[in-house]
Each structure stands twice: as C-alpha cells, then as structure tokens.
Image 1 (cartoon, one colour):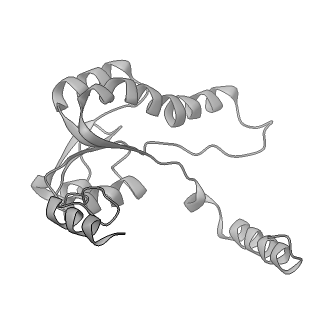
Image 2 (cartoon, one colour):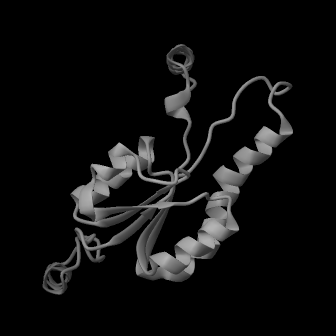
Length: 178
C-alpha cells in the first residue's frame, strides 16, 4: 500500500483495506431463532457491542435469558413459516441494519423412519424461512446493511459420532488424503 493511500485511508476514516471500519453500536439487529443456542449468543454479542437487538422466536414471550439482555434487546414472537407473522413484524420493526436468519430445526434418523411431513417442516423452517424472511425484511434494510444466514447441526451430533468423525479425519490425514 502506498503512503498516499495510507494517508487517504487514515484521513477518510477507512480501514486498512479501503473499507469503512465496522461501526460499533447503534445498529438495529434482527435475529430469528434468538431464544436459545447460537441465536441467543449472537444477541448477547450484539448487545455487548452496543447494538439494539430485536430477538425473535416462536414463543409468545421472551424467556429469562432474553430478558437478561436488558433494554438493548426487545423480543418479538415470529414464526418464520408464517406469512402473517413476517408481515406484522416487518410493519412493526422498521429499518434494520443487520438481519440474522438463525431459526432452524434438526431432522435426523433412518430415512425410512423420518416422515415426509417432518422433512417438509424442516425445509419450511430452515430454507424457506430464510428465503421468505429476505422477501419480507430486505425492503427494510438501511444502505450498507448486512444479511447473515446460519446453518449448523454440529452441536447436536452425539459426542461419540464426533469422535468417530475425528478418527476418520486423523486416518485420512495420516494416509495423505487431506
């Protein structure tokens, strides 16, 4: 990077890669699936940064963990599969700086034992919940806003299964496969 560029970046308030540094605080953050797990942890981190969080989940009222986040966090019931819930939330919330689509469920078991209704429910929540959420909430985004979509069931995999996966990776590595 040339000295002139360094000076320009410093004078303009840009970060080292020519982008404005991520603002700390004062953002409005909407998180789906925020009552527990990863969504709750994200809410805690955003609140700690000074952001205003709208925590959403299926429950009709905030649980104790969400309430502990204080005034920087408001709770709203939101079923990500419900058009009416999404429309009502979009109308009530207003402008948003960060959208986090975190709501999701895990489906598991032998293929012959998991019903198609269960698979459809998982797709409705995990995939279409985010797609329809984008359709409802993207019009609310402020310029420069961010959209984050999460997806993981790693925390739900039994420890024994993870140990087996770890052994397989170790064997692959030793045989030169990785």
